[in-house]
Image (cartoon, rainbow, N blue to C red; front, top):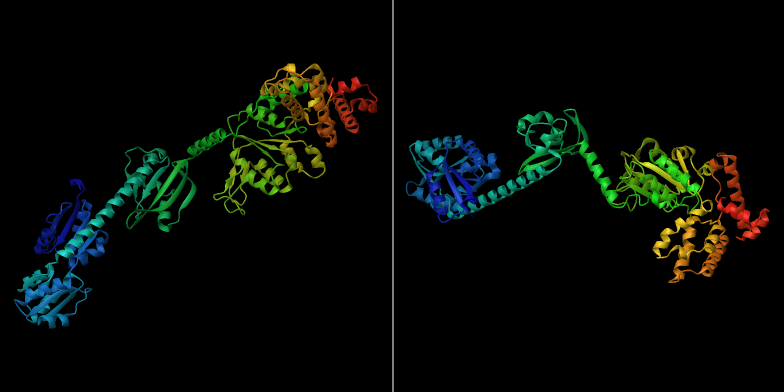
Amino acid sequence: MIASDKYKFALIFHSWKLQRSVQRCLAGIEDVVMSYHVVEIGHESAKARELLDNGIESILCYGGTAQTLLREIGNSLSIIERSDIDTIQGLIKAKEISNKIVLSTDYRDPCNIKIIEGLLDIKIFHVKYANWDEIRYGVIEARKLDFSVMVGGGHSCQCMVEEGGVGIVVEPSRHYIMRALEQAKAIAKHKRQEVQRQADFLAILKQLDDGVICVDQAGDAVFCSPTALRLLKLPPQTPLTGIGKYLEPLSLKEVLATGIPRANALVTIRNEQFMANSLPISLYSGNRGAVALFRDITSFQNIDRKIRSELYARGFVSRYSRKDLKGKSQPLRSLLDKVRHYAATNAAVHIWGETGTGKELVAHTLHAESDRSTKPFIAINCAALPESLLESELFGYEEGAFTGAKRGGKAGLFELANQGTLYLDEIGDINHSTQIRLLRVLEAKEVMRVGGARVLPVDVRIISASHKPLAELVRNSKFRSDLFFRLVVLQLITPPLRQRLDDIPLLLESLLQRYHKTMASISKTILDCMYSYAWPGNIRELFSVVERYFILLGDRELDEDLFISLFDENIDCSTSSCVEPSPIPADISSGGSMKECLEQLKMQLVQQALRDTGGDRQAAARQLGISYNSLWRILRGI
């Protein structure tokens, strides 16, 4: 140990003999610095507290002094014990003077006087004391009976000397002095560890972004972090006594009294709102306290923004934009024009369209062009999840909400999409109970987790989509009308491929690049085949046929026969799959000009004729009573 690490002990005593005994034992021990203090009777406790306040780590004492201090500073006291052998040695010395001896012991110390008297052939006047006054009274009574020799501690012997007798101090053995020193070292080590832990704890508290205030067992502030002073708008030099009036809103005294933490409490201090957590702690050995950690609401908003940014980085983003909606046809241009207008609002948008027409691409584009573009974009297919799982995914759940629930619960998609966009695909397939909960979220703009008791405010734009006309579902009582009106504030209709056949070359650009092909692989004959087909599977079906053609084409530049054979196979598969025709949504059949309605009706009739004839366009034209060219023009929207 270096000098600064030496243990600092003090010996409190009433007899110089005790000091000499301890000094002899300390010879050669270099890791202890001992100070010696003779104190007057009744001043032991005050002296001990003074020494501890001035850096003494443990106090050693002996005899009655130890019993006096034990109740006052027990955690810092190291007692030098008195053994029976030490007492007998003192009695043997006293016998040299007289065989009538006064023996003083603490009333709690066991002592068989009869056995000692028999062994040493002496007469003992036993003074058992609980306080200093009882020693003096016992000495006076012994003197009346002509006992003039005292064996005991320093105060007992002093009383006997004052009454005209002789005092022989019982000196402790080296063994018990060394044991007391080891005990004192253990006390000092424990204190140092406590001090280090407390220093580490306070160092951590100073680094927290939260404001921190600690109080001791009496409810007085013992620590206030720089952040706390800043949040409370107090000068850095503010004394601890100057923050007492701010403790009540933090409920520190209440927590100190009950021992019950107070979590996530919204408090107001100096007209500012804070979120506070107050809890009981152990400041140091044998003492309790309480600590409050609080943070201003703005900090929580910043944290929320950071979380949203991390969600953005994790992939909850729109992956497509306007450039991914390929084409120059009138139906697509009209759609993109509406997308541009709708993106500037926060109103709910419903996208209707047949399967494979690019509804999700439109949803991504709406988000990418909105003010929420830097916030999360989360998509979920409502038809892909079981009904029991869909609610927990949308709204989240608390721990223990159901069998298999994750520890700590799970945030739902509404929470994750806060300030962003939630895309609900195939919204027409959700059940009645989920519809009710979804309606609640849309109306109140707050969500409650499954099994939870707290509502969480959310700011989410809803984009929904369905290949089923929601109006038809409402008429058939399969979809709530109130939810329908919440979802269909704005509506977009993705045109089927048969209405934008001229866009096929632009749609194929991505496939050409992926397979390192050029438009030379798509001849006029191949394009005519594509233009003459209704594509019930829309863009997804087109990509399937062309991708199959590119794979089988290999390194060759063009093979029309190969494409025609694959094309015919696809038509056979499409017609044999009995794909149900997609009904025209109610708002189309009832709205728009007569010309538009007639064009839609023509397309519907041609589609039905093609299905009836197994895709034979010549036979379909004959069934409809029109020429093949007229049928071809209807399919191309000309």
